[in-house]
Image 1: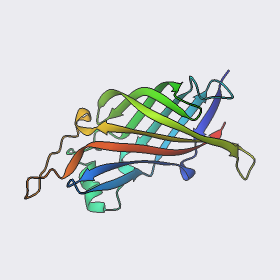
Image 2: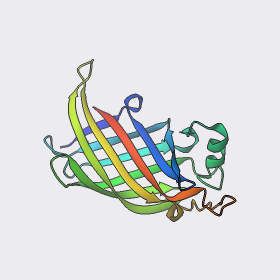
Image 3: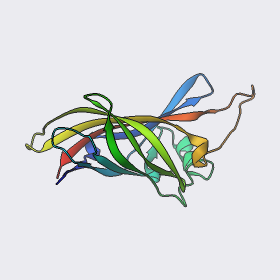
Length: 176
C-alpha cells in the first residue's frame, strides 16, 4: 500500500533559468501546474514516483512580449503543445535527503528520458493539521533535444539564449 501526495500549487513553484547573451540569465515559471507523488515506504522516498504537468500558456518571465515569443513555434509552440509533462520512475536514494530520479519528460511533442535530483526537505503538519511534505527537484536540460532550437545571435555574433536550461521545482505536497 502506498501513500499519495498532491502538489499544493499555492505553496509550490515550477521554473527554469537559461543563459542570456553569455552574461546573465533569464528566469521563468509556470503559474498553472499539478502533480502527485506516490510514496511506497512511510519512512523514505525510495521507489516513490512523481508525475507533474505544467500548462504552457501559464508561462511567466515577467515580460509579456518575451512570454508571447516563448509561446510561439520558435520555442514551446503552445498552439499545438498545451502541456509539459514529467513522469518519473522510482526514486533511488543518494543519501539521507537526496534522490536520483529517472523519468520521461514531454516538451513540444518530444519525449526524452532524463535524470533529475530530488531533495527531501522535510515533513510537517499545516495549519489545518494536514500532513505536508517538501521536495526540491532540479536538473539541466539541453533545449535543442526538445525541438527548441531558436538560435538568434546579436550583432556581435553571440547566441541570445543558452543551450541548457536549469529547471527547478520547489514543491509542497499534501497527503490525500
